[in-house]
Length: 199
Image (cartoon, rainbow, N blue to C red; front, side, top):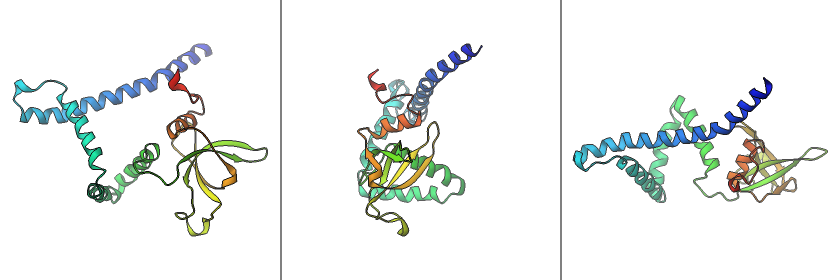
């Protein structure tokens, strides 16, 4: 019975990420087609509309928004609109958490220093995979500023969370890993390895 349960769990863990990814893409396609396709049908004659125009329009809109965000005025207007969410009691917590998470995974602004590092802790020493979030003390609280220290985020496996610790530079060792590879490696406790893309 244990062997059957273990085999079923292995199959579930294997197929669940695939199903969730496909479902997310399906939901995005259906949503774009329903919303933008409906708008297009109101403008164009029924004979001129064909299925998929809503999806194409959605991709074009997303691309245009990406282009516009390079303009300072657009970024300023977006920040003003975003501030409204930050002042709404319930939406504030949800939106801020989602914004911080996606900014960490896919940064929208170039950071002064961004490095995946191995952090050495304890005696006997152990190494943890972390991410440098502040390489200088300029943006740290007054009592924590020091030239020889860096701020490192240590994510926890299988959950969104972790620890932010202040370390001397001698305690961190740069790793030749991208942010995406390191996040996938740490969040899955190393189960995925670092070369799954080559399998």
